[in-house]
Length: 313
Length: 319
Image (tube, rainbow over all chains, first blue to last red; front, side, top):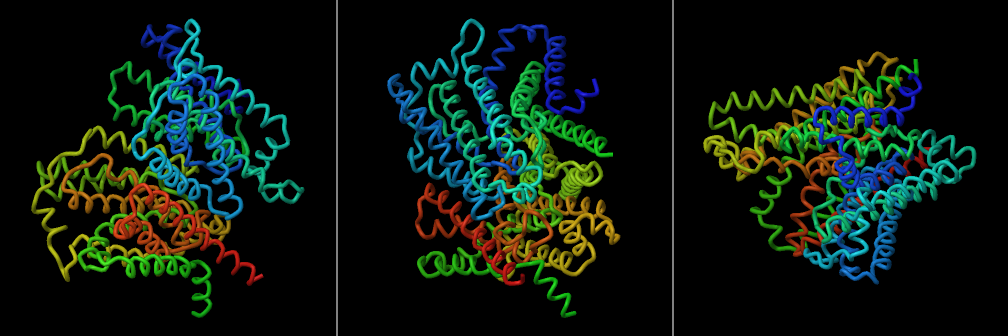
Protein backbone atom coordinates (compact mmCIF):
# COMPACT_ATOMS: atom_id res chain seq x y z
CA UNK A 1 0.00 0.00 0.00
CA UNK A 2 2.75 2.42 0.89
CA UNK A 3 4.58 1.71 -2.29
CA UNK A 4 1.54 2.79 -4.24
CA UNK A 5 1.64 6.17 -2.55
CA UNK A 6 5.33 6.46 -3.18
CA UNK A 7 5.03 5.68 -6.87
CA UNK A 8 3.18 8.65 -8.30
CA UNK A 9 2.24 6.92 -11.52
CA UNK A 10 0.70 3.91 -9.76
CA UNK A 11 -1.09 6.34 -7.50
CA UNK A 12 -2.70 8.12 -10.42
CA UNK A 13 -3.77 4.79 -11.96
CA UNK A 14 -5.32 3.90 -8.59
CA UNK A 15 -7.28 7.16 -8.61
CA UNK A 16 -8.38 6.48 -12.18
CA UNK A 17 -9.73 3.02 -11.26
CA UNK A 18 -11.43 4.38 -8.14
CA UNK A 19 -12.96 7.11 -10.22
CA UNK A 20 -14.39 4.69 -12.78
CA UNK A 21 -15.85 2.55 -9.98
CA UNK A 22 -17.38 5.53 -8.19
CA UNK A 23 -18.91 6.88 -11.38
CA UNK A 24 -20.33 3.41 -12.08
CA UNK A 25 -21.97 3.40 -8.66
CA UNK A 26 -23.43 6.86 -9.11
CA UNK A 27 -24.62 6.25 -12.64
CA UNK A 28 -25.05 2.49 -13.35
CA UNK A 29 -24.96 3.07 -17.11
CA UNK A 30 -21.37 4.15 -16.73
CA UNK A 31 -20.18 0.62 -16.02
CA UNK A 32 -21.24 -0.35 -19.55
CA UNK A 33 -18.03 -1.24 -21.42
CA UNK A 34 -19.43 0.44 -24.53
CA UNK A 35 -19.52 3.72 -22.64
CA UNK A 36 -16.08 3.23 -21.13
CA UNK A 37 -14.61 2.62 -24.56
CA UNK A 38 -16.32 5.71 -25.92
CA UNK A 39 -14.50 7.76 -23.32
CA UNK A 40 -11.26 5.96 -24.17
CA UNK A 41 -11.79 6.78 -27.83
CA UNK A 42 -12.40 10.45 -27.08
CA UNK A 43 -9.27 10.69 -24.99
CA UNK A 44 -6.98 9.23 -27.68
CA UNK A 45 -5.68 12.60 -29.01
CA UNK A 46 -5.13 13.93 -25.49
CA UNK A 47 -3.11 10.85 -24.54
CA UNK A 48 -0.95 11.17 -27.66
CA UNK A 49 -0.27 14.89 -27.10
CA UNK A 50 0.57 14.21 -23.46
CA UNK A 51 3.17 11.58 -24.43
CA UNK A 52 5.03 14.27 -26.37
CA UNK A 53 4.60 16.80 -23.60
CA UNK A 54 6.13 14.32 -21.12
CA UNK A 55 9.28 14.02 -23.27
CA UNK A 56 9.81 17.75 -22.87
CA UNK A 57 8.71 17.93 -19.24
CA UNK A 58 11.24 15.25 -18.30
CA UNK A 59 14.01 17.61 -19.41
CA UNK A 60 12.55 20.30 -17.17
CA UNK A 61 11.12 22.24 -20.11
CA UNK A 62 7.60 22.85 -21.32
CA UNK A 63 5.98 22.93 -24.75
CA UNK A 64 3.21 25.49 -25.19
CA UNK A 65 3.11 25.06 -28.96
CA UNK A 66 1.51 21.60 -29.06
CA UNK A 67 -1.99 23.04 -29.47
CA UNK A 68 -0.95 25.03 -32.54
CA UNK A 69 0.90 22.04 -34.02
CA UNK A 70 -2.25 19.91 -33.52
CA UNK A 71 -4.34 22.44 -35.46
CA UNK A 72 -1.73 22.90 -38.17
CA UNK A 73 -1.33 19.18 -38.88
CA UNK A 74 -5.10 18.72 -38.77
CA UNK A 75 -5.51 21.31 -41.54
CA UNK A 76 -2.33 20.28 -43.40
CA UNK A 77 -3.09 16.55 -43.50
CA UNK A 78 -6.67 17.19 -44.62
CA UNK A 79 -5.51 19.31 -47.55
CA UNK A 80 -3.01 16.64 -48.64
CA UNK A 81 -5.33 13.66 -48.24
CA UNK A 82 -8.45 15.21 -49.81
CA UNK A 83 -10.49 12.16 -48.90
CA UNK A 84 -8.55 9.70 -51.06
CA UNK A 85 -7.28 6.44 -49.61
CA UNK A 86 -4.17 6.27 -51.82
CA UNK A 87 -2.88 9.60 -50.55
CA UNK A 88 -3.51 8.82 -46.88
CA UNK A 89 -0.14 7.28 -46.13
CA UNK A 90 1.73 10.06 -47.86
CA UNK A 91 -0.40 12.69 -46.12
CA UNK A 92 0.14 11.26 -42.66
CA UNK A 93 3.90 10.96 -43.16
CA UNK A 94 4.10 14.54 -44.45
CA UNK A 95 2.08 15.83 -41.48
CA UNK A 96 4.26 13.97 -38.97
CA UNK A 97 7.36 15.32 -40.68
CA UNK A 98 6.11 18.89 -40.46
CA UNK A 99 5.24 18.41 -36.78
CA UNK A 100 8.72 17.09 -36.11
CA UNK A 101 10.24 20.07 -37.94
CA UNK A 102 8.24 22.53 -35.84
CA UNK A 103 9.34 20.67 -32.73
CA UNK A 104 12.96 20.82 -33.84
CA UNK A 105 12.70 24.58 -34.37
CA UNK A 106 11.49 24.86 -30.77
CA UNK A 107 14.39 22.74 -29.62
CA UNK A 108 16.90 24.84 -31.56
CA UNK A 109 15.52 28.02 -30.00
CA UNK A 110 15.70 26.58 -26.51
CA UNK A 111 19.10 24.90 -26.75
CA UNK A 112 21.04 27.14 -29.13
CA UNK A 113 19.61 30.65 -28.63
CA UNK A 114 19.04 29.74 -24.96
CA UNK A 115 15.53 31.14 -24.86
CA UNK A 116 13.46 29.99 -21.88
CA UNK A 117 11.27 27.05 -23.10
CA UNK A 118 8.12 28.87 -22.02
CA UNK A 119 8.89 31.90 -24.18
CA UNK A 120 10.25 30.03 -27.19
CA UNK A 121 7.28 27.66 -27.46
CA UNK A 122 4.85 30.49 -26.78
CA UNK A 123 6.34 32.54 -29.60
CA UNK A 124 6.39 29.57 -31.96
CA UNK A 125 2.78 28.74 -31.15
CA UNK A 126 1.81 32.21 -32.41
CA UNK A 127 4.03 31.77 -35.45
CA UNK A 128 2.68 28.31 -36.31
CA UNK A 129 -0.84 29.68 -36.10
CA UNK A 130 0.16 32.34 -38.60
CA UNK A 131 1.77 29.80 -40.93
CA UNK A 132 -1.38 27.69 -40.71
CA UNK A 133 -3.59 30.65 -41.65
CA UNK A 134 -1.24 31.59 -44.50
CA UNK A 135 -1.25 27.99 -45.74
CA UNK A 136 -5.01 27.58 -45.90
CA UNK A 137 -5.97 31.23 -46.37
CA UNK A 138 -8.32 31.05 -43.39
CA UNK A 139 -10.45 28.41 -45.05
CA UNK A 140 -9.42 24.77 -44.48
CA UNK A 141 -10.07 22.39 -47.37
CA UNK A 142 -10.10 18.65 -47.85
CA UNK A 143 -11.00 15.91 -45.43
CA UNK A 144 -10.14 12.51 -44.03
CA UNK A 145 -10.13 9.38 -46.18
CA UNK A 146 -11.99 6.18 -45.33
CA UNK A 147 -8.93 4.54 -43.82
CA UNK A 148 -8.12 7.54 -41.67
CA UNK A 149 -11.73 7.83 -40.56
CA UNK A 150 -11.59 4.21 -39.48
CA UNK A 151 -8.40 4.79 -37.51
CA UNK A 152 -9.92 7.86 -35.86
CA UNK A 153 -13.46 6.78 -35.16
CA UNK A 154 -13.90 3.13 -36.23
CA UNK A 155 -14.26 0.17 -33.90
CA UNK A 156 -13.71 -3.57 -33.83
CA UNK A 157 -16.78 -4.68 -31.93
CA UNK A 158 -16.68 -2.23 -29.07
CA UNK A 159 -12.94 -1.63 -29.05
CA UNK A 160 -11.98 1.62 -30.79
CA UNK A 161 -9.29 1.38 -33.45
CA UNK A 162 -7.51 4.47 -32.16
CA UNK A 163 -6.44 2.45 -29.10
CA UNK A 164 -3.79 0.84 -31.34
CA UNK A 165 -2.27 4.21 -32.15
CA UNK A 166 -1.68 5.40 -28.63
CA UNK A 167 -0.82 1.90 -27.35
CA UNK A 168 1.99 1.71 -29.91
CA UNK A 169 2.94 5.30 -29.06
CA UNK A 170 3.11 4.49 -25.36
CA UNK A 171 5.12 1.28 -25.76
CA UNK A 172 7.56 2.79 -28.25
CA UNK A 173 8.17 5.87 -26.13
CA UNK A 174 8.49 3.73 -23.00
CA UNK A 175 11.18 1.69 -24.75
CA UNK A 176 12.89 4.86 -25.99
CA UNK A 177 12.88 6.43 -22.54
CA UNK A 178 13.93 3.36 -20.57
CA UNK A 179 16.10 1.35 -22.91
CA UNK A 180 18.06 3.89 -24.94
CA UNK A 181 20.82 6.26 -24.05
CA UNK A 182 18.72 9.14 -25.38
CA UNK A 183 15.91 8.32 -22.93
CA UNK A 184 18.16 8.22 -19.91
CA UNK A 185 19.80 11.43 -21.00
CA UNK A 186 16.43 13.18 -20.85
CA UNK A 187 16.01 12.10 -17.22
CA UNK A 188 19.54 13.31 -16.46
CA UNK A 189 18.91 16.66 -18.13
CA UNK A 190 15.84 17.26 -15.98
CA UNK A 191 17.37 16.03 -12.75
CA UNK A 192 20.69 17.83 -12.90
CA UNK A 193 21.89 19.39 -16.10
CA UNK A 194 25.18 20.59 -14.71
CA UNK A 195 26.09 17.10 -13.57
CA UNK A 196 25.02 15.62 -16.89
CA UNK A 197 27.33 17.98 -18.74
CA UNK A 198 30.18 17.31 -16.35
CA UNK A 199 30.11 13.55 -16.89
CA UNK A 200 30.30 14.15 -20.62
CA UNK A 201 26.73 13.79 -21.85
CA UNK A 202 26.01 15.85 -24.94
CA UNK A 203 23.07 17.85 -23.63
CA UNK A 204 22.20 20.04 -26.60
CA UNK A 205 21.34 17.49 -29.32
CA UNK A 206 19.38 15.39 -26.82
CA UNK A 207 17.48 18.41 -25.57
CA UNK A 208 16.59 19.37 -29.15
CA UNK A 209 15.41 15.81 -29.85
CA UNK A 210 13.00 15.96 -26.90
CA UNK A 211 11.18 18.86 -28.57
CA UNK A 212 11.25 17.03 -31.90
CA UNK A 213 9.38 14.14 -30.28
CA UNK A 214 6.90 16.51 -28.71
CA UNK A 215 6.14 18.04 -32.12
CA UNK A 216 5.91 14.58 -33.68
CA UNK A 217 3.34 13.35 -31.17
CA UNK A 218 1.36 16.57 -31.42
CA UNK A 219 1.23 16.01 -35.19
CA UNK A 220 0.03 12.45 -34.63
CA UNK A 221 -2.74 13.80 -32.41
CA UNK A 222 -3.70 16.26 -35.13
CA UNK A 223 -4.03 13.40 -37.62
CA UNK A 224 -6.11 11.42 -35.10
CA UNK A 225 -8.45 14.35 -34.57
CA UNK A 226 -8.83 14.69 -38.33
CA UNK A 227 -9.76 11.00 -38.46
CA UNK A 228 -12.25 11.39 -35.62
CA UNK A 229 -13.97 14.53 -36.89
CA UNK A 230 -13.55 13.86 -40.62
CA UNK A 231 -13.07 17.48 -41.66
CA UNK A 232 -10.35 19.97 -40.68
CA UNK A 233 -11.06 22.72 -38.16
CA UNK A 234 -9.25 25.94 -37.33
CA UNK A 235 -10.01 25.85 -33.62
CA UNK A 236 -10.22 22.21 -32.49
CA UNK A 237 -7.03 21.52 -30.60
CA UNK A 238 -6.37 24.86 -28.98
CA UNK A 239 -7.21 23.43 -25.55
CA UNK A 240 -4.69 20.64 -25.90
CA UNK A 241 -1.76 22.74 -24.71
CA UNK A 242 -3.02 23.29 -21.18
CA UNK A 243 -4.88 19.96 -21.07
CA UNK A 244 -1.71 18.03 -21.93
CA UNK A 245 0.24 19.77 -19.18
CA UNK A 246 -2.54 19.13 -16.68
CA UNK A 247 -2.86 15.46 -17.58
CA UNK A 248 0.90 14.94 -17.45
CA UNK A 249 0.84 16.38 -13.94
CA UNK A 250 -2.16 14.23 -12.99
CA UNK A 251 -0.20 11.27 -14.38
CA UNK A 252 2.54 11.93 -11.87
CA UNK A 253 5.17 13.63 -14.04
CA UNK A 254 7.23 15.99 -11.92
CA UNK A 255 7.08 19.56 -13.08
CA UNK A 256 10.68 20.34 -12.36
CA UNK A 257 11.79 17.49 -14.60
CA UNK A 258 13.72 14.31 -14.08
CA UNK A 259 10.99 12.06 -12.77
CA UNK A 260 7.85 10.51 -14.14
CA UNK A 261 6.82 7.77 -16.51
CA UNK A 262 5.35 8.06 -19.97
CA UNK A 263 2.46 5.86 -18.80
CA UNK A 264 1.35 8.89 -16.82
CA UNK A 265 -0.02 10.12 -20.16
CA UNK A 266 -2.40 7.17 -20.14
CA UNK A 267 -3.70 7.53 -16.58
CA UNK A 268 -3.68 11.34 -16.56
CA UNK A 269 -5.36 11.71 -19.94
CA UNK A 270 -8.07 9.16 -19.15
CA UNK A 271 -8.67 10.68 -15.73
CA UNK A 272 -9.25 14.12 -17.28
CA UNK A 273 -11.78 12.65 -19.74
CA UNK A 274 -13.62 10.51 -17.18
CA UNK A 275 -14.06 13.49 -14.89
CA UNK A 276 -15.57 15.45 -17.78
CA UNK A 277 -18.03 12.69 -18.69
CA UNK A 278 -19.11 12.19 -15.10
CA UNK A 279 -19.80 15.92 -14.84
CA UNK A 280 -21.83 15.69 -18.03
CA UNK A 281 -23.88 12.95 -16.37
CA UNK A 282 -24.65 15.33 -13.53
CA UNK A 283 -25.82 17.86 -16.08
CA UNK A 284 -23.21 20.36 -15.00
CA UNK A 285 -22.62 23.29 -17.34
CA UNK A 286 -19.32 24.05 -19.06
CA UNK A 287 -18.64 26.61 -16.34
CA UNK A 288 -19.03 24.05 -13.57
CA UNK A 289 -16.82 21.60 -15.46
CA UNK A 290 -14.04 24.17 -15.57
CA UNK A 291 -14.31 24.81 -11.86
CA UNK A 292 -14.27 21.12 -10.93
CA UNK A 293 -11.34 20.43 -13.28
CA UNK A 294 -9.37 23.26 -11.70
CA UNK A 295 -10.12 22.08 -8.19
CA UNK A 296 -9.02 18.54 -9.08
CA UNK A 297 -5.72 19.69 -10.59
CA UNK A 298 -5.12 21.93 -7.57
CA UNK A 299 -5.91 19.17 -5.07
CA UNK A 300 -3.82 16.59 -6.91
CA UNK A 301 -0.79 18.87 -7.09
CA UNK A 302 -1.18 19.85 -3.43
CA UNK A 303 -1.38 16.19 -2.44
CA UNK A 304 1.61 15.14 -4.54
CA UNK A 305 3.67 18.06 -3.24
CA UNK A 306 2.92 17.16 0.36
CA UNK A 307 3.79 13.54 -0.39
CA UNK A 308 7.08 14.59 -1.96
CA UNK A 309 8.01 16.75 1.01
CA UNK A 310 7.28 13.92 3.43
CA UNK A 311 9.71 11.80 1.45
CA UNK A 312 12.42 14.43 1.80
CA UNK A 313 12.15 14.57 5.59
CA UNK B 1 25.51 54.70 -2.81
CA UNK B 2 27.69 53.99 -5.79
CA UNK B 3 27.82 50.36 -4.83
CA UNK B 4 24.07 50.19 -4.63
CA UNK B 5 23.80 51.70 -8.09
CA UNK B 6 26.18 49.13 -9.46
CA UNK B 7 24.20 46.33 -7.86
CA UNK B 8 21.01 47.74 -9.33
CA UNK B 9 22.46 47.85 -12.83
CA UNK B 10 23.47 44.23 -12.40
CA UNK B 11 19.90 43.36 -11.46
CA UNK B 12 18.28 45.07 -14.38
CA UNK B 13 19.42 45.15 -17.94
CA UNK B 14 17.15 47.41 -19.92
CA UNK B 15 19.41 48.50 -22.78
CA UNK B 16 18.36 45.69 -25.11
CA UNK B 17 14.59 46.26 -24.79
CA UNK B 18 15.08 50.01 -25.20
CA UNK B 19 16.99 49.35 -28.41
CA UNK B 20 14.34 46.96 -29.74
CA UNK B 21 11.59 49.43 -28.85
CA UNK B 22 13.31 52.36 -30.57
CA UNK B 23 14.00 50.31 -33.68
CA UNK B 24 10.37 49.21 -33.92
CA UNK B 25 9.05 52.73 -33.41
CA UNK B 26 11.50 54.34 -35.82
CA UNK B 27 10.44 51.95 -38.57
CA UNK B 28 6.78 52.68 -37.90
CA UNK B 29 7.42 56.43 -37.73
CA UNK B 30 9.35 56.56 -40.97
CA UNK B 31 7.21 54.31 -43.09
CA UNK B 32 3.67 55.01 -42.00
CA UNK B 33 1.90 58.37 -42.17
CA UNK B 34 -1.10 57.17 -40.21
CA UNK B 35 1.07 55.91 -37.34
CA UNK B 36 2.39 59.43 -36.74
CA UNK B 37 -1.04 60.94 -36.05
CA UNK B 38 -1.65 61.93 -32.44
CA UNK B 39 -4.98 60.16 -32.68
CA UNK B 40 -3.26 56.85 -33.31
CA UNK B 41 -0.65 57.42 -30.63
CA UNK B 42 -3.34 58.05 -28.00
CA UNK B 43 -5.19 55.01 -29.26
CA UNK B 44 -1.97 53.03 -28.91
CA UNK B 45 -1.65 54.08 -25.27
CA UNK B 46 -5.24 52.97 -24.63
CA UNK B 47 -4.47 49.60 -26.21
CA UNK B 48 -1.25 49.08 -24.28
CA UNK B 49 -2.49 50.28 -20.84
CA UNK B 50 -4.17 47.02 -19.66
CA UNK B 51 -1.22 44.92 -20.81
CA UNK B 52 1.16 47.28 -19.01
CA UNK B 53 -0.72 46.81 -15.73
CA UNK B 54 -0.75 43.02 -16.12
CA UNK B 55 2.96 43.02 -16.96
CA UNK B 56 3.70 44.90 -13.72
CA UNK B 57 2.04 42.14 -11.69
CA UNK B 58 3.61 39.42 -13.79
CA UNK B 59 7.05 41.00 -13.36
CA UNK B 60 6.68 40.97 -9.57
CA UNK B 61 5.84 37.28 -9.60
CA UNK B 62 8.51 36.34 -12.15
CA UNK B 63 11.14 38.21 -10.11
CA UNK B 64 10.44 35.78 -7.25
CA UNK B 65 11.09 32.90 -9.65
CA UNK B 66 7.40 32.08 -10.11
CA UNK B 67 4.85 32.67 -12.82
CA UNK B 68 1.18 33.65 -12.79
CA UNK B 69 -1.00 32.10 -15.48
CA UNK B 70 -4.27 33.13 -13.87
CA UNK B 71 -4.15 36.88 -14.48
CA UNK B 72 -5.74 36.87 -17.92
CA UNK B 73 -8.81 35.11 -16.59
CA UNK B 74 -8.97 37.69 -13.76
CA UNK B 75 -9.47 40.42 -16.35
CA UNK B 76 -12.42 38.51 -17.81
CA UNK B 77 -13.82 37.82 -14.35
CA UNK B 78 -13.60 41.51 -13.39
CA UNK B 79 -15.43 42.59 -16.56
CA UNK B 80 -18.22 40.06 -16.07
CA UNK B 81 -18.77 40.91 -12.39
CA UNK B 82 -18.77 44.61 -13.22
CA UNK B 83 -21.20 44.20 -16.10
CA UNK B 84 -23.65 42.20 -14.01
CA UNK B 85 -23.55 44.08 -10.70
CA UNK B 86 -22.65 47.69 -11.45
CA UNK B 87 -26.03 48.63 -12.89
CA UNK B 88 -28.06 46.75 -10.27
CA UNK B 89 -26.27 47.87 -7.13
CA UNK B 90 -23.91 50.80 -6.83
CA UNK B 91 -20.57 51.13 -8.59
CA UNK B 92 -18.70 51.25 -5.28
CA UNK B 93 -20.17 47.96 -4.03
CA UNK B 94 -19.39 46.31 -7.35
CA UNK B 95 -15.77 47.48 -7.24
CA UNK B 96 -15.49 46.26 -3.67
CA UNK B 97 -16.80 42.86 -4.72
CA UNK B 98 -14.40 42.63 -7.67
CA UNK B 99 -11.37 43.53 -5.58
CA UNK B 100 -12.52 41.14 -2.84
CA UNK B 101 -12.62 38.24 -5.29
CA UNK B 102 -9.29 39.24 -6.84
CA UNK B 103 -7.65 39.52 -3.45
CA UNK B 104 -8.90 36.15 -2.23
CA UNK B 105 -7.77 34.23 -5.32
CA UNK B 106 -4.40 35.99 -5.25
CA UNK B 107 -4.15 34.95 -1.62
CA UNK B 108 -4.96 31.36 -2.59
CA UNK B 109 -2.23 31.39 -5.26
CA UNK B 110 0.30 32.87 -2.87
CA UNK B 111 -0.62 30.52 -0.05
CA UNK B 112 -0.31 27.45 -2.27
CA UNK B 113 3.02 28.53 -3.68
CA UNK B 114 4.62 29.68 -0.42
CA UNK B 115 3.19 27.61 2.41
CA UNK B 116 2.32 24.41 0.50
CA UNK B 117 5.36 24.88 -1.78
CA UNK B 118 3.34 23.89 -4.82
CA UNK B 119 4.73 24.53 -8.27
CA UNK B 120 3.65 28.04 -9.38
CA UNK B 121 2.99 27.03 -12.99
CA UNK B 122 0.54 24.24 -12.19
CA UNK B 123 -1.02 26.06 -9.24
CA UNK B 124 -1.89 29.13 -11.26
CA UNK B 125 -2.91 26.91 -14.18
CA UNK B 126 -5.48 25.32 -11.85
CA UNK B 127 -6.72 28.66 -10.54
CA UNK B 128 -6.88 29.93 -14.13
CA UNK B 129 -9.24 27.08 -15.02
CA UNK B 130 -11.31 27.74 -11.88
CA UNK B 131 -11.57 31.48 -12.53
CA UNK B 132 -12.51 30.78 -16.15
CA UNK B 133 -15.31 28.55 -14.88
CA UNK B 134 -16.55 31.25 -12.50
CA UNK B 135 -16.50 33.76 -15.35
CA UNK B 136 -18.48 31.52 -17.67
CA UNK B 137 -20.93 30.86 -14.84
CA UNK B 138 -21.56 34.58 -14.38
CA UNK B 139 -21.80 35.41 -18.08
CA UNK B 140 -21.70 32.61 -20.67
CA UNK B 141 -21.56 35.12 -23.52
CA UNK B 142 -20.53 38.77 -23.84
CA UNK B 143 -23.23 41.05 -22.47
CA UNK B 144 -24.39 42.87 -19.35
CA UNK B 145 -24.69 46.55 -18.72
CA UNK B 146 -22.07 49.04 -17.65
CA UNK B 147 -23.52 52.31 -16.32
CA UNK B 148 -22.79 55.26 -18.56
CA UNK B 149 -21.53 57.50 -15.76
CA UNK B 150 -18.73 54.98 -15.06
CA UNK B 151 -17.70 54.72 -18.72
CA UNK B 152 -17.84 58.49 -18.99
CA UNK B 153 -15.47 59.06 -16.09
CA UNK B 154 -12.92 56.44 -17.13
CA UNK B 155 -12.96 56.68 -20.92
CA UNK B 156 -14.54 59.91 -22.14
CA UNK B 157 -13.10 62.41 -19.70
CA UNK B 158 -9.87 63.63 -21.20
CA UNK B 159 -6.94 65.44 -19.69
CA UNK B 160 -4.31 66.69 -22.14
CA UNK B 161 -6.09 64.75 -24.87
CA UNK B 162 -5.66 61.44 -23.04
CA UNK B 163 -8.49 59.54 -21.33
CA UNK B 164 -8.46 59.13 -17.52
CA UNK B 165 -7.94 55.44 -18.29
CA UNK B 166 -4.41 56.14 -19.51
CA UNK B 167 -3.60 58.56 -16.69
CA UNK B 168 -4.70 55.99 -14.11
CA UNK B 169 -2.41 53.38 -15.67
CA UNK B 170 0.50 55.79 -15.70
CA UNK B 171 -0.14 56.65 -12.05
CA UNK B 172 -0.30 53.00 -11.01
CA UNK B 173 2.87 52.25 -12.98
CA UNK B 174 4.78 55.02 -11.21
CA UNK B 175 3.58 53.86 -7.79
CA UNK B 176 4.59 50.30 -8.59
CA UNK B 177 8.03 51.43 -9.75
CA UNK B 178 8.50 53.17 -6.41
CA UNK B 179 7.35 49.99 -4.65
CA UNK B 180 9.82 47.86 -6.57
CA UNK B 181 12.85 50.16 -6.57
CA UNK B 182 12.53 52.01 -3.29
CA UNK B 183 10.90 49.72 -0.70
CA UNK B 184 12.08 46.76 1.32
CA UNK B 185 9.41 44.61 -0.29
CA UNK B 186 10.90 45.32 -3.71
CA UNK B 187 14.35 44.34 -2.55
CA UNK B 188 12.96 41.19 -0.96
CA UNK B 189 11.45 40.17 -4.31
CA UNK B 190 14.93 40.11 -5.82
CA UNK B 191 16.33 38.29 -2.82
CA UNK B 192 13.70 35.53 -2.97
CA UNK B 193 14.10 35.07 -6.71
CA UNK B 194 17.87 35.23 -6.70
CA UNK B 195 18.60 32.68 -4.03
CA UNK B 196 15.86 31.47 -1.73
CA UNK B 197 18.14 29.82 0.79
CA UNK B 198 20.34 32.89 1.07
CA UNK B 199 17.20 35.01 1.51
CA UNK B 200 15.96 32.81 4.36
CA UNK B 201 19.35 32.86 6.06
CA UNK B 202 19.62 36.64 5.85
CA UNK B 203 16.25 37.05 7.50
CA UNK B 204 13.98 37.83 4.58
CA UNK B 205 10.43 36.73 5.22
CA UNK B 206 10.23 34.58 2.12
CA UNK B 207 6.68 33.31 2.59
CA UNK B 208 5.14 36.72 3.22
CA UNK B 209 7.01 38.16 0.26
CA UNK B 210 5.73 35.42 -2.03
CA UNK B 211 2.13 35.80 -0.88
CA UNK B 212 2.35 39.57 -1.35
CA UNK B 213 3.79 39.16 -4.85
CA UNK B 214 0.89 36.96 -5.97
CA UNK B 215 -1.64 39.30 -4.34
CA UNK B 216 -0.06 42.24 -6.16
CA UNK B 217 -0.26 40.42 -9.46
CA UNK B 218 -3.95 39.55 -9.05
CA UNK B 219 -4.76 43.10 -7.90
CA UNK B 220 -3.01 44.51 -10.97
CA UNK B 221 -5.04 42.12 -13.12
CA UNK B 222 -8.29 43.17 -11.45
CA UNK B 223 -7.42 46.82 -11.96
CA UNK B 224 -6.80 46.11 -15.64
CA UNK B 225 -10.18 44.37 -15.81
CA UNK B 226 -11.98 47.21 -14.07
CA UNK B 227 -10.55 49.63 -16.65
CA UNK B 228 -11.15 47.25 -19.52
CA UNK B 229 -14.86 47.07 -18.76
CA UNK B 230 -15.11 50.82 -19.26
CA UNK B 231 -13.38 50.53 -22.61
CA UNK B 232 -15.54 47.75 -24.04
CA UNK B 233 -18.59 48.77 -21.92
CA UNK B 234 -19.84 45.22 -21.52
CA UNK B 235 -18.75 42.04 -19.78
CA UNK B 236 -16.81 39.55 -21.90
CA UNK B 237 -15.86 36.10 -20.52
CA UNK B 238 -13.01 35.70 -23.03
CA UNK B 239 -11.55 39.21 -23.29
CA UNK B 240 -8.64 38.53 -20.93
CA UNK B 241 -7.44 35.25 -22.36
CA UNK B 242 -4.62 36.49 -24.62
CA UNK B 243 -3.26 38.75 -21.89
CA UNK B 244 -1.76 35.98 -19.77
CA UNK B 245 0.75 34.85 -22.37
CA UNK B 246 1.23 38.40 -23.67
CA UNK B 247 2.24 39.56 -20.20
CA UNK B 248 4.78 36.75 -19.87
CA UNK B 249 6.12 37.59 -23.32
CA UNK B 250 6.29 41.29 -22.41
CA UNK B 251 8.25 40.61 -19.23
CA UNK B 252 10.62 38.32 -21.10
CA UNK B 253 11.13 40.80 -23.95
CA UNK B 254 11.79 43.44 -21.29
CA UNK B 255 14.72 41.47 -19.95
CA UNK B 256 13.06 39.98 -16.87
CA UNK B 257 14.71 36.60 -16.35
CA UNK B 258 12.16 33.80 -16.08
CA UNK B 259 14.47 32.09 -13.60
CA UNK B 260 13.83 34.95 -11.19
CA UNK B 261 15.92 37.59 -9.50
CA UNK B 262 16.86 39.61 -12.56
CA UNK B 263 15.04 42.34 -14.43
CA UNK B 264 12.74 45.14 -13.41
CA UNK B 265 9.81 47.32 -14.20
CA UNK B 266 11.55 49.71 -16.60
CA UNK B 267 12.31 46.77 -18.86
CA UNK B 268 8.97 45.11 -18.17
CA UNK B 269 6.98 48.19 -19.16
CA UNK B 270 9.01 48.68 -22.33
CA UNK B 271 8.38 45.03 -23.07
CA UNK B 272 4.66 45.65 -22.65
CA UNK B 273 4.93 48.49 -25.15
CA UNK B 274 6.76 46.31 -27.65
CA UNK B 275 4.29 43.40 -27.41
CA UNK B 276 1.24 45.66 -27.15
CA UNK B 277 2.12 47.85 -30.10
CA UNK B 278 3.32 45.19 -32.55
CA UNK B 279 -0.20 44.62 -33.87
CA UNK B 280 -0.88 48.34 -34.16
CA UNK B 281 2.39 49.01 -35.96
CA UNK B 282 1.98 46.09 -38.34
CA UNK B 283 -1.58 47.24 -39.06
CA UNK B 284 -0.36 50.73 -39.85
CA UNK B 285 2.35 49.32 -42.12
CA UNK B 286 -0.36 47.41 -43.99
CA UNK B 287 0.73 43.89 -43.08
CA UNK B 288 -2.06 41.32 -43.45
CA UNK B 289 -3.26 39.68 -40.20
CA UNK B 290 -1.90 36.23 -41.15
CA UNK B 291 1.60 37.55 -41.67
CA UNK B 292 1.24 39.48 -38.40
CA UNK B 293 1.14 36.22 -36.42
CA UNK B 294 4.37 35.05 -38.04
CA UNK B 295 6.12 38.41 -37.69
CA UNK B 296 5.01 38.81 -34.08
CA UNK B 297 6.58 35.50 -33.12
CA UNK B 298 9.77 36.33 -35.00
CA UNK B 299 10.00 39.74 -33.31
CA UNK B 300 9.55 38.17 -29.86
CA UNK B 301 12.23 35.56 -30.52
CA UNK B 302 14.60 38.14 -31.99
CA UNK B 303 14.13 40.64 -29.14
CA UNK B 304 14.63 38.09 -26.38
CA UNK B 305 17.43 36.29 -28.20
CA UNK B 306 19.20 39.64 -28.60
CA UNK B 307 18.79 40.43 -24.90
CA UNK B 308 20.19 37.03 -23.95
CA UNK B 309 23.18 37.46 -26.29
CA UNK B 310 24.03 40.78 -24.67
CA UNK B 311 23.74 39.29 -21.21
CA UNK B 312 26.01 36.39 -22.16
CA UNK B 313 28.58 38.77 -23.65
CA UNK B 314 28.56 40.93 -20.52
CA UNK B 315 28.91 37.84 -18.34
CA UNK B 316 31.96 36.77 -20.37
CA UNK B 317 33.54 40.23 -20.03
CA UNK B 318 33.11 40.24 -16.26
CA UNK B 319 34.83 36.91 -15.99
